[in-house]
Every structure is written in structure tokens, then in C-alpha cells.
Amino acid sequence: MSTLTSPLLVRRGAFGAFARGIPLASLLLLGSLACSSSSDGSSDGSGGSGGATSSGTSAGTGGAAEGASTTSGASVTTGTSGSGGQAPTGATTGSGGAGTGASSSTTATSSGSGEGGGSPDAGFQPCPETGPCKILPLGDSITFGLGFDGGYRVELFHLAQQDDHEITFTGTQQMNGPAMVDGAPFPRNHEGISGETIQQIANRVPTPALRDMPHIVLLHAGTNDMVSSANGADTRLGALLDELIAEAPDALIVVSSIIPLPFAASSVTTFNAAIPGLVEERASAGAHILFADQFTGFPTSELGDQVHPNQAGYARMAGVWYEAIEDYLR
Image (cartoon, rainbow, N blue to C red):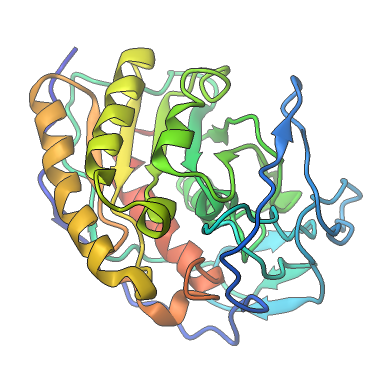
């Protein structure tokens, strides 16, 4: 196993103006029902149902999903399925708000912001020579995509498609996102559950999260810990990283700082400051692990409800993830 270091590469990108975001109805940090998964990767969500997809695929379920939105500065999507995401549990990020019904984008531009991943090691290639590179989006409601159907995964898929990289997403949770992106079927899988803390996410590793072993893991975790128990969050994150490294030794693990949480700003700052050191320590020991900075440059104006990104925020996240993994994609 080769060693990856994690120098911080700064990539600042200007976003075009968005006609309007996808605001959530209100900030509700109380109550959540995490969706349960079935063995075929589907799940029994709860809450209102989303709108029908233009391609005839079934819509996701979750919080209220209604209305059509038109934005600019994000990926081109067609056949969008309405899905509001999961209803929340406890005091969590998996909270309230409406998803999107049919959404259309008018442009296909996205730039990463903040500091990203690190230089690739020529001796390590997680993705196969043929077939799609399997990417596991792992986390909570921000990974699920609460506030914009499909979350950052939509724009990330677009960015890979436009550069002729073949990727797919894995995961066992309630599928969501558009039916098609750039004329290609969108892989609607993920491993994001509303309201989950770092420990709860760790409880899903290796089963069921790694049931379909990924080539790349994208981990954004800790937002709910800032609400429930910020003390020791960095220690819990380190333990989760160790578990991922042990259970998926041939995968590239990309762990990010968490995006802003204005009402817990001090806790977020303390937690985020510890993450690069956790990554560097494990990279120096030979793990295939990188740090991606999702916090730096993320404006609170791109939070739809002061917790979850709106469409612009998710596109920004996609740009940071893509910069971190692009050189590893085939």
C-alpha cells in the first residue's frame, strides 16, 4: 500500500448568480425518522411523497416535495424525481423542509471552492481500468441531499460525465435524485441517513455501507455531533476513519471538513481544525486517504435552512469533491 500525503491545494471558483435557491420551509431540528433499507438497496422512507419523474421512474419519498424550480450555475438535469428527503430524528441535520419537484438547470457550470484533496500517488489507482468507478457517498442528511433532490451527487456526476469519466454511486439507503443527467441514467444510490452522528455512521461500517465495496468513499460527517455532543467528535471521527481503512483498504477515502453551521460556529471551527491532522496521521501510516475542505469559502447564503445547502451549495460541494478525486478517475 502506497502512502498518500495531503498537501492542501487551493482552488477558488466563482459561481454564477442563481435565479433562486431551493429554500427549506423552516429550520426544524427536532424529530427524524431515518429510512430503513431493504436488501435490494431500496428503503421504506416516511413522510410525504415527491412528484413524479418526467422519465416515468418512481419518485422518492420524504418531506414535502413540491413546485418546480429553475436555477442557473448547476448541472443540466432532466427527468428529475421529486423527493423531499427523510424526516428528522432528535436534534439533527435531518430536518424539515421541502425537497424539489421537477427541477431544471439552465447552465452546466460549477466550480469548487475552498481547499481540496492533495496530490495523487502515481502508484495507487483505486478505480478499475474498465467499468465505472464506484463511489460511496457516506454521511447524514447533507449526503442524502435534503433541500435539493440528489444533493451534491447530481453535480458531481455531471462533472465526471463532461470529462468522460465513468462513475456510479453505491449505498443502501433510500434512492433519490433525478432520473437522468446529461442524457445518461443517474445512479441514485447513496449512504446518507438524516440525523446520524459520527458514531451512528460508524455503526453502518462495514454493514450495510460496504455491501457493494466502493473504490472511493466520500465522507462528510459530524454536523449532528455539533448539535448533540461536540466534545470528542474528532476522536469519534478518527475511529470511523480507522474502521473504513481497515474494512476498505483498497479504496480511496476522502474525508472533508463539515460545511458551516451558523448556530454552532465555534464547535464547527474546533472540529474542522482537527480533521487535517487526523488525515495526515493516517496517510503517513500508509492509508489511502485525502482531506477535502468543504468549509472554506462556503457562504451561509448557500444554506437553504442554515443547515443544509441549497442547489448552489450542493454544486459547490460537488466541485470540491471532484477536485479531490479527479486525478484518480479513469
